[in-house]
Image (cartoon, rainbow, N blue to C red; front, side, top):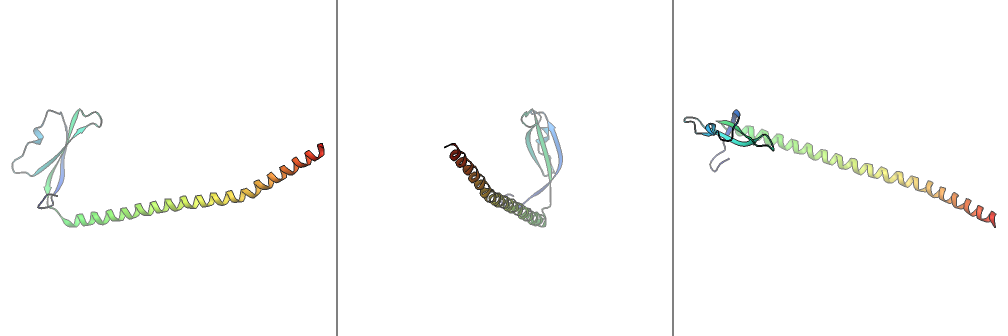
Length: 125
């Protein structure tokens, strides 16, 4: 986007150059190019990566299709998050129910152990 219009470019050249070589960044008469300049390789930055594109007609339908596809991908992402949340909640509920089932068993074992201790103490006196 710019102030007046939306422009579209198609990549037609990708080059890796030395940091001092800027010949590919010069204006080419009669052509409408845009060039992205960045450092490469990642974290080493000894060279420059040039990605050049030429202007093509802008078609709004493509943007609308992209927006529709993007909305659909957001919907899938939200559904995924909801599904993960429901699974976590379900697992938490199952865990709580299992703990509640085990608590009476533990209490019964503790009661039996306490009775044995009382019998042993009574037998010693």
